Length: 387
Image (cartoon, rainbow, N blue to C red):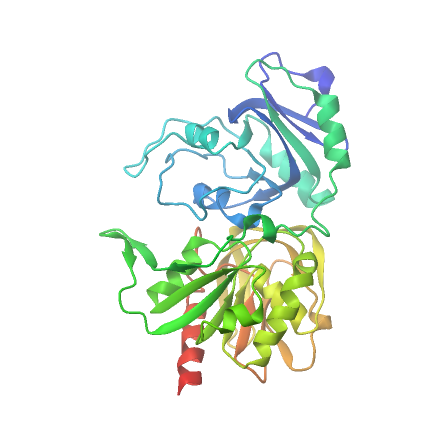
């Protein structure tokens, strides 16, 4: 951490926080500047899935694991066609890739995706700062010639309004409906194809990760993906057996202005409904609960979550900066899962309807597979409703 007076001679990039703090380093990826909320992710693998997760819209991602880029980049480990994150922060310089699946150097891939990055700074110090003081606003800037306007960057970081009140789902949702048929990747055959689906599921896309859709297709679902702004009538005309509410970025209360009335109507139909991440928060809002911004959020693939019904502890993958306030839940909704890190809400279940949701990511991309049973639970609800 340094101010402008202590700038290293070879600095080609900087991370400038709203309070004027400057971290110097070397530029990676695209040249330019980008403003956002600075967060950190503790995952040891899956950096390409993390960078392409639409839920990172508005975020500058700090990787606490130092070896980012060592397995290169490929065209398979993508959670969206166009990454929505605002930038990346790395400890070490990106090395040459060493993996049989590598198709590109990560630096080249970041540059092609127009993602600005910085390497060579003390990510431990930055992560501790975020932990203690909360996620700051910041600007990451990269110029190979070292022409870095720090004062301008500090003003931009200070003036950025932040994620509270920001509807980012509209920036990452699909523009028109489409059908998803790709199933999960296997070592022997890569991605598969859903040839004989048994269930009709409509997925509301608030920023859906591809691996969630793959998991649904892999369990026999014909998945129709609709935009976040789709009405209940738009969704129900597909005669779904079940409804899925996807993950996504931004403030759930802002997205909820148009999403909550729709989800409320969908819940009234009694059709099995499953939500993940932002979908979990939207479902909670539709049921009458409230949400709030977290101090620093949960982002990583090692978060312990307790299932209150079974007592089982799952290690989960997470990426969220808002949470549901459990005390605001109505009497017919119960807390199903809690975080063992901070006790915050990680899941809810409607007692008198086939609807549930979780705050974390059971599709495990990246992350452990402890929570895949939730997809099977959703399918079980569909089968029961059919019967």
